[in-house]
Length: 86
Figure 1 (tube, rainbow, N blue to C red):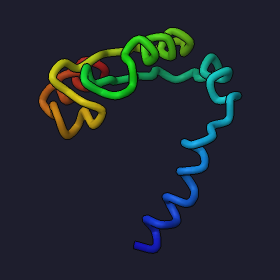
Figure 2: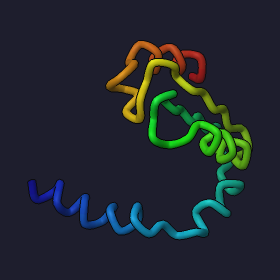
Figure 3: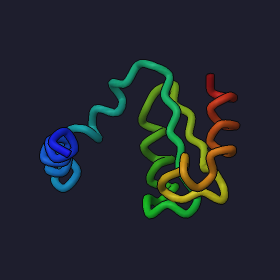
Figure 4: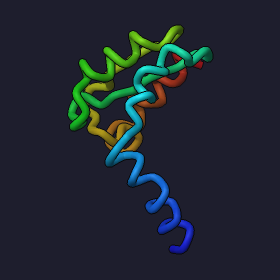
């Protein structure tokens, strides 16, 4: 529980008030990148697509029949996408 609490105290401030520079630096990512979104996620797929377009060598995929936690809601769909990316 101690590690979990440390994790939360570290990550929550970053999620609640993210550094705007993060988005501006997406173009700095140089390694192949794969962004996966679930069709029924609360994060809009067009926003993920916009982010993917800023990253050189990035592929974006929306997994149908999946929510925000793609690995939980459509594990087979996730594996299928990962096989194609690797």
